[in-house]
Image 1 (tube, helix red, strand yellow):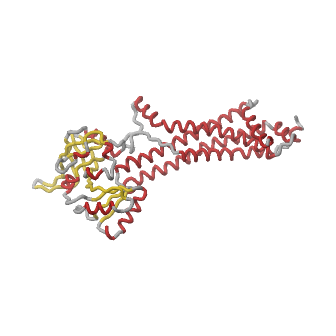
Image 2: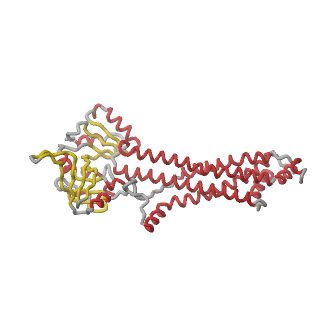
Image 3: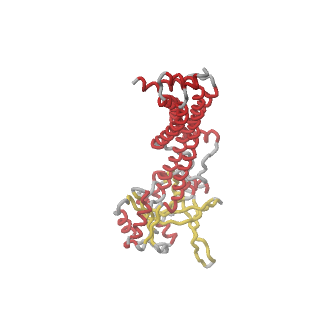
Length: 417
């Protein structure tokens, strides 16, 4: 039993020993710090990418319907939309249904112009498909009643127009109205009755109005369609496809969230994998620095290896000694990297927010990015993968130097001692 522990004890002793060659110690420390840095950065970056992925799901896709069902003839509305909504709610995976009218337009106020998507909703049903009610910062969603001509704006959109609750804005829509004086774009004055803030890009290009008011503005005799929320957003495409293949809904077509936000979601997933792969190269370089460290140690310890062989140590024992030494360097670097990586992943959002407050620099401009802050979400599965890969690379890096050490011939070495 004691013989089995000899490689472990000697390997640790070599790791702790003060070497005559300080360059070996420097390379060993560089390998350890490289592993620490690589593992730290990899955990941090994967956590940030997970944060973006989570924010996309909870915020952007919380405001965007998972699936929209509307008539193929867009010039008319759905007169019996309640019956259609009840039928859709009864289908598997459907958690909520709400009517809507959707139009692109331009808001003007105080000399400022800003394009936006305006959605006509019924506040009584909207909570079934959207998180808008949970993100109201001023006013109320219930003010969107037919004939009131009220509008709820995103926080960034309201700021760009320079308006607040109680102010008046004018909405211009692409449809033209023919009058005796000529052809003019259709327009209508609205009163700002609420402001919402999701903390994403849609705060600058989305507004809500009453379903009845938007029907009148679009000259429809019913809602344009039904917005649906599913229990699993990743089945939205299959659900939409199955719905359109159902002869009962031949007059309708369905669009799921992948048409409007799918590219963004896929880009985040692809970036996560590519960045993880690139950063893993840092870990690999640091791990393979262990090769040069151990090769130099083997050269430095030729006499010790020869003495151990004459005392009865087998080539396998010699190999295990240097494997233990290399793995000790790797494990220490990995453990430190995991500690620092987890600590940064849990606090990077607060750190970046503090830096922004101190410097006054906005790192993520909501006009460019879909959120205005740096999210982070630590996934233990990612930590496990990083640790396993880093450990495997460290282990592989010890094999060649350990094999060379096991091939040392005691007679040739001791001849010149």
